[in-house]
Length: 437
Image 1: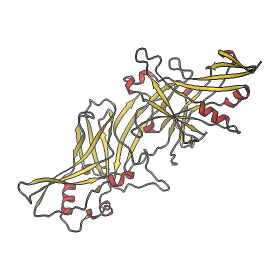
Image 2: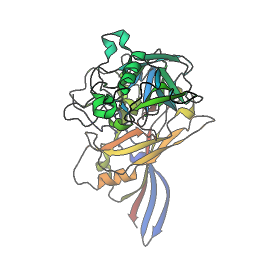
Image 3: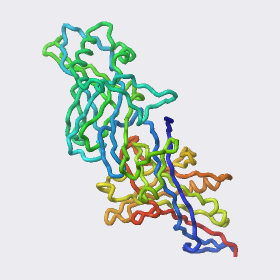
Image 4: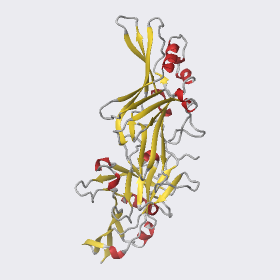
């Protein structure tokens, strides 16, 4: 399978009719007339792009859980991490006693779905080393590694049923197998043990997988995972409980999210991607809708195929602004507060490779009273000017992705295309026509 690090399709179809012009005024200067015109009967080509895979290693947050949506399908998220000792532990066997071992994952207050239902958190030990595929330099949402419990269910390191409380609790702690705890504790009593270096430790412990069962939501956690081995130190009176710490902080690039999406039964289901690294679904094949969800590699593309010909037919035209407006489908969200606050817009070529490093953002305006005017807007004049600066014809477009300060997220956005009856997309060109008198 080929791995693509960036891909998205944004399409603008531009078809102008002079019959729909509306002159907003004219001025005269030295015999030249400046006529201001607005064109908003422009055809937009819109499609959804689903990437084969996206980079999820060294994440800003971990995702755990399961979420079922009538459009976005069934989404399952789990995390993998390589664990190493935080210090070179050596204990005195005459003064210490083993207590317990727990895994700690810390909430970051991100969630998607119903958090009122109890879920089971599962910690597994990996049966193989986490490593990159050949010629790869990262881990992806499609990456996965075998766990010991796949062959022996008794090998599960630990499970705990929890009531998800991302806003009232700071962490989830899962008690792990005392077999593992005793094994590590006994190692710590040796003068020459596996904790002397990360390399020695990884020879005997590949890492962990964190997953869930019975979940109806996806929860976000800090990427910093910790395993604590508690012991009692009797060297002083009274005795004191201490712990040995094992974390993933030395190998954050080996920590990653595995995210699967099953689209069967939805408009996003496709059986053939024509041997590409992505699948493209035109909005006319998905109910006049287009979709975005960065956590599963889903973006929106817009194209303007007739832009150059329109400009050529109007040589005295000056473009003042080009405002793109997208309306979110309101019944997809519990409330307006669940809408992404911003959408990043990229210039991309026909293969969805970014053309320029600079980006712009669509901003959200809420109509809380009637919801009819809730919309994302952005002036794409810079993109049109860029297209006009090119000599050759091309199939460049715009790529739209949900912006996130928290890294790749699981939230989604559904918008209507230009043919959608209730949530119609629109591109409005504000033009200055020069006319010599």
